[in-house]
Length: 217
Ligand SMILES: [Zn+2]
Image (cartoon, rainbow, N blue to C red; front, side):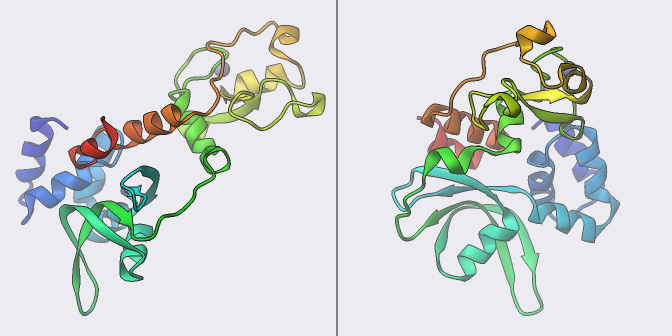
């Protein structure tokens, strides 16, 4: 998060500059995030509710990333407690609540790592939104997942067999292996490990300093 960006937000005259910086700092890309914030309040609130929240197990082990909306449900249900808070607040008719940045489950939960972590979003994060065949970077909406060994040939949906792929490469590869299609993988897709999991959480949370002490050790 740059000082320049904070200044520009402050100069718009928000009543709570720190709250604004929260929305700005963790909402993803550069200028689109900034313009979203001062557009309108409902929109800003909506995007705030989508901000990532780090979820810790009862043992303080980071286990997941969820959205503010879901995290607040867990807090209200008494299933989790807030460990770190943003300066931003959300208001309901009766109350106002500080927005959580890190929450911790009160009861230990066993999480099957492999199945939980395999998602389109995580594969794109691992591959840094880079098509693994042409090497170009795309917005998530312009990427698909490619089965390196096609499903029709017994290829599985796994961390080792799924890669980020642009539609163009995906179409031209078709139902063939990379070798058959004359494609070369930019990088061999790595299997999921605890390291991958931490790495993904760091990539999602690198703008939020409150996450650091739970992820960087
Ligand atoms: Zn491509």
